[in-house]
Length: 173
Image 1 (spheres, helix red, strand yellow):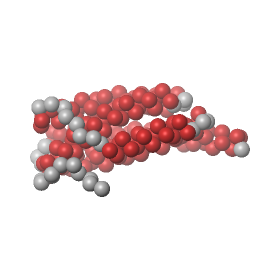
Image 2: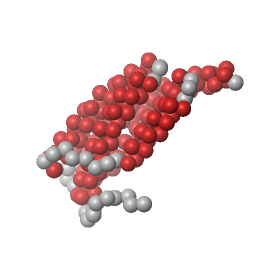
Image 3: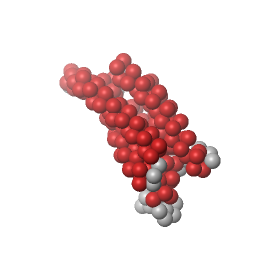
């Protein structure tokens, strides 16, 4: 399995390539969050998804601006990891019959996506620092903190939702 599709000869090329994948990741996540908001039944979960969707639109704009400064246009490269995680979410949405179980599944997948994003933005922040791109490093650090807050909020909501899902499945048995 090939991990990189470009000939990456130095950190700058790796950084630029990862930025293109990050832009694709954020585009995919805006679509997914919109769908997840519609499929969620818990009002607090819907609100959390809507809030993070609005933040994600800002992330798209910030990453798009950085990519455009490098290439002259907002080009992307496919982020296969995000695509796979979103595909998993779509399967879970279809498979979960009980609304609270579906909400628990949505949270689980959302947190997997958040953790991937946190890894990406930590990496980009570190590379930007190494490359002297301190302004970009600050942007990535800000986005990283928003991703951490979203994950923390989802963990809090999951505590209640998971109890509801367990109660629902216990009653069905």
